[in-house]
Image (cartoon, rainbow, N blue to C red):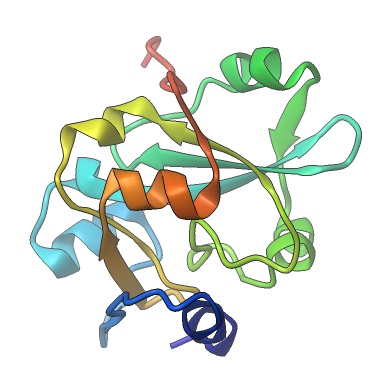
Amino acid sequence: MNQQFINYLKQNNLDIKVHDFDEFTHTAKQAATALDCDVSQIAKSLIFKSESGQPVLVVASGSNRVDVSKIANLLGETIHKADADFVKEATGYTIGGVPPFAFLKKIITFIDQDLLKFDTIWAAAGANNSVFPLTIDNLVKISQGQVTDIRDSTV
């Protein structure tokens, strides 16, 4: 369990139940296995670094790969996958446990429209062995993210 994430929930009066596992939920596939759900229901948080040095979060369905050119077009500048140090500095979390909100500062967020298919989605809760359920409406409201087509259709 990650204290930064728990503190954010408390400070914002969010009634979210975090599920901790003995095994890792570091990847979408590991999380889906632990939860016994479809990997597409996992909302994976991917941090990118914009050309101007800003963090950009893409919350993608666990079965999708991100088309970075689509995000770059929306953002108006190129983006690249961020390294572990940049992710930790920008979010306060390590790769594999990054939640879709509860960051040290506001991060531009894009949300995969394919997550709209599900009543419940699951996201990392700040650690590589914890997740929490939420609805897409709550994800959009809390993260202030923009729902869009992010899927790389070439794979």
